[in-house]
Structure formats: structure tokens, C-alpha cells
Length: 266
Image (cartoon, rainbow, N blue to C red; front, side, top):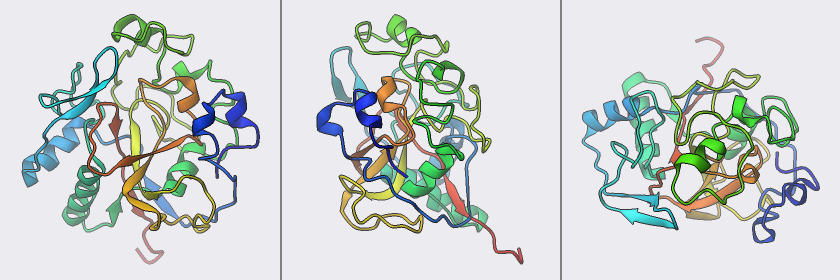
């Protein structure tokens, strides 16, 4: 788990962000299952209609910077979506409430994945920067990230660092449209960045070695993984991680669920 030695420098990660994915370390995983897809807007709508959970704005890209917009939420993040697109403008508290609602409805222990579970699922047995290899150039077959479609259609991104290909999706893509990884999971990198259970810690010193969520650290922030449709190649890597306040909603951020593996007798 974590970035390989030299990876962050090779990827030209800003020096202020380096070291967050280090030291690379071994983790012994317990059995679990993860959603094949990110939670969709249609699935999130069912939760909202059942629970009455509200939403009061979202951070959006305004062409020059990210700004809070009271008029935006998961129903209308500011770009076209249908019910098969991933839910966006979802806080960690929203995502955790969805998982708890799903667990209550099904009787299974649905939850957000731990950070270790997320990375294990994303890597799918690989040790490269991305589950298709180290090079970002092939990402348009595998991950919806900032690319020529983004630069052409998203205001203020023309001069950004992008992948030199076109995945046809300037904003989010319907889940599952791009190639799955070796575990059959789609959009583990790109599309929307994903919340995990873990409290935020600035590096991996003292991290759990059993795959469980890190319950110590800054628990008013949680770890976000995977990068999004708006992220440059350096942010669309299996090791890349950031922390974000649990109450914040961002229009490039969503989640997927995990569940404990059933016991053998089940």
C-alpha cells in the first residue's frame, strides 16, 4: 500500500503534497466486497426520498476557482447527468448515512470502504501507479480524467495539464462505461473521487496493517481517493490521497460502498 519509491517525483507531484502516500507498506487484508460501480444518482435519489435527507449547496468549479454555490446539489451539480451517472455533491456524512440506510434496508453490513480496502480494490493485484500501468496516456480507455474533452468543454481548463486523449466525457460518465480493472470494478480511478472511512493522517506512519479503517488522526477530515473527471494525471493514481472535511460537498466527489464478506456458513 502506498506510492512506490520515486513515483511521486516521476509524476511531478507538487512538493507540498509529497510524502502523503508514504512509506509504502504491507497490509494483510480480510475478505470484503466492494461495489462494482460508484453509487449512482438514481440510487442516491432512492435514499433521499426514503429518508428526507437534505442538501444545501456544493463547491463547483467557476472557471477560475472553486466556489460554494447554494443552488447546486446532487440533483443539479452544474453539468448534465442522468440517473446512471455517479452521485456528486455528496459529503462524507451523506455517504456514511447512505451506507447505514442501505445496511438497515438489506440486513447486510454496508459501509464505506477503509482506505486500505479502497487501494486494494483499485490496484487489483498490480503494483504500478495505475491499474493499467505506470503511464497515464492510456487512461481514456480506463478512467474518466481531465483530457481533451475537458479542455474543450469545461470553462477555464484549456491551459491545464491533461491526458492527451479523449474519453468523450467532459464531465462525469455513466458508471461502468470505461474498462474495468482485473477485479471487475469500474471507475476506481477517475469519474468521481471517492470518500473512505478513514480519519485523515498526513502519511502512513502508524497506519493499521490489517486493512481496517484508521480511527485515529484528524477525524473531522476523512480520506478521499481515486481522482476525478476534473483531475490531472498526477491525481489519478492508485496511491494518491487527500483529506477533506466531513461536511464538505464537492461536485467532483462521490463514493462507493463496501460490505463485510459473509461468514462461510452463510
